[in-house]
Image (cartoon, rainbow, N blue to C red; front, side):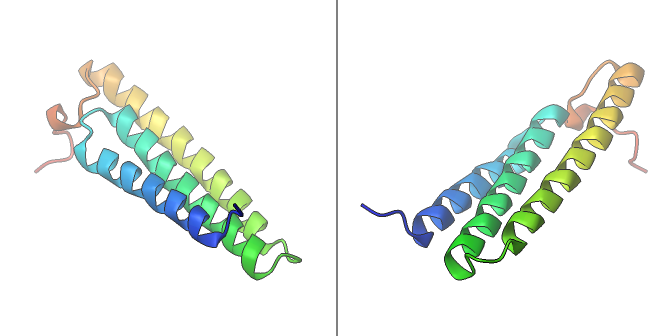
Length: 103
């Protein structure tokens, strides 16, 4: 059995769905960050799969995937710094209990 583009798209859709569900249902800030990373990985699978099957000689899909990985690393760095700051001030990282930015 040959792996075709539909297999990659199905895998990416499942990963993105799990990540989206995790963002909506998690109460822990670190769990939300992990779910966002899962969504980024689904996007990377799509980028590389479309590059492989549509233009296999170009490297644009891989370059965009590397760019997405760099953005995800920056997002994790800033996100974890914010989570550590919130934990230091409130001793809690549950998103429901933090009302710092509410009016």
